[in-house]
Length: 325
Image (cartoon, rainbow, N blue to C red):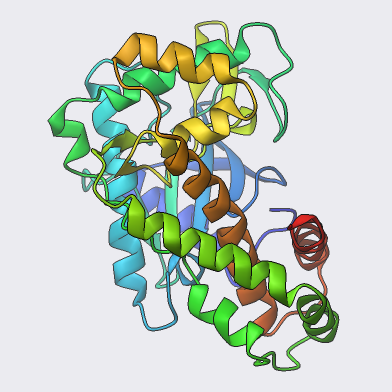
């Protein structure tokens, strides 16, 4: 995210780090990186360096009726799975450092969670193409290892039931329920009206694929193995940002990793003995767009001010809607 949340003070973060990790914070600096979570770099009094991630549980809910505790438990399960992978010897998994209670994260007030990771020195990447030689192949190797995770790691992760978070709000918006909650509400109403049919067709295709592909075997998946969730350090490649880890068919990771490169799918089949199922690749590709639409529309159905995050979100929303067929 581009700016820190107004309702999460640095004082509360410092207290959370002290209470949960026994950390005496010397310096705290907001980092406008990534999308969805908030990040800070932390230096403690002993000179140790850390990377802090804060998540807004109201945005982690799948429906307005879901409680913050339910959203917390799902996030907790994903991060516990990452910690279990790291403990099982997958050194490339950048897992959170457990606070005193032994869990992978702590609450900061009622609404936010905080997770602490070791600070890594290395090269970071943005969302987009794999344009570094060997990058995609390295990520495929890591994904295959995650998919082969022992049962002890899989048992913590939530199961993917094909639910699209905030889909109820998307349906309401398509039906014309878009209250005037801020500067992007009316432009969004016009944009949705222009692209109503492609969105409805996308939802229908997704529902049909779900109905036809519910019973495929599940593995532990990362969920978002794109370049922006990788780093290249002196110790090798790392896979970061495990907040979406879940048990699901392997295609949940493979569609994004392979893109239009079938050699990735062939390599996965050769390594695992399981050829990817193309309808599931299509399912997860379509769900990515639906999830982006639903989350972004939920943002604009709530009060908003037109801040930098709102502007970027509307740009993303416009791009998705105007490219739907």
